[in-house]
Length: 296
Image 1 (cartoon, rainbow, N blue to C red):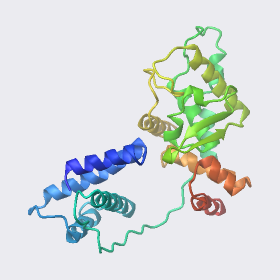
Image 2 (image 1 turned 90 degrees about the vertical axis):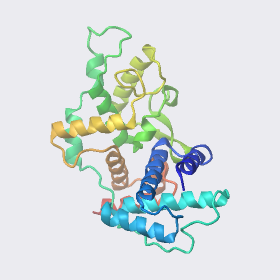
Image 3 (image 1 turned 90 degrees about the horizontal axis):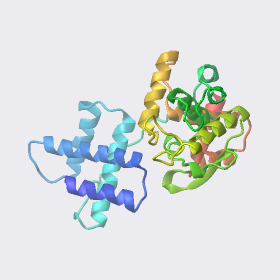
Image 4 (image 1 turned 120 degrees about the horizontal axis):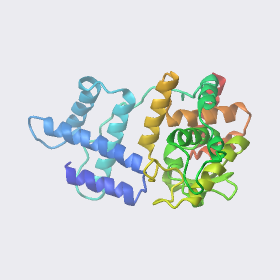
């Protein structure tokens, strides 16, 4: 395997499989790690099953990566070699006739406890308070980054959206009243989520009003200080900052809001198949995990 082959595989995943940018970055990271391992070997021989075993040992013992990371890197590598074999770029795959134990300990999702959520939302700045300012210049976007962070966090806990989904919502994806948001999830599957909380809906509509009033270089719903799309890494950084300021440990992550949303829906008695649709899970087995979290 070489860099040209890995680049071609990533392009195949982007164009034909329609994977997200996040998945493509993870695949590229996994394959580049193997290329680096190949380059470090003293004898540049063909990649065989023994090479894969050496690489596995390196990941587990030399680099001391956790089991889930080792599994992900090997799964990515196996998939890439399978594609190279199918497209006749190589004759055989080093994974043929190779049995690897790739199981990882199954950990339950870690939702955010309710007292922490209450503390977070009590300290978040409401957008409506800023919009009520009589000195506000008409047409100006007066909402600061802290308010946007709070609004996004409240939407995550209310809808269970993934951070990659909510940061790619465009203005036209939100209904006129703001209660329905159309999103595109994994596999480019489209679904609708709903905002039922009155205070949150009021803040969202206030934000929407100001976004529509001011012409911006992008039509994405949530933007940064430069008027461009609010990215996933930027929001994660904001959450980490908020966690430090409020003394929340472990620090908040976007996916923990999704875990919390799913757990609370189950606790409130919402039918599990409806929860599956709202969260955009392809398999109900994924949603069923949250019944165990709720029991705990």
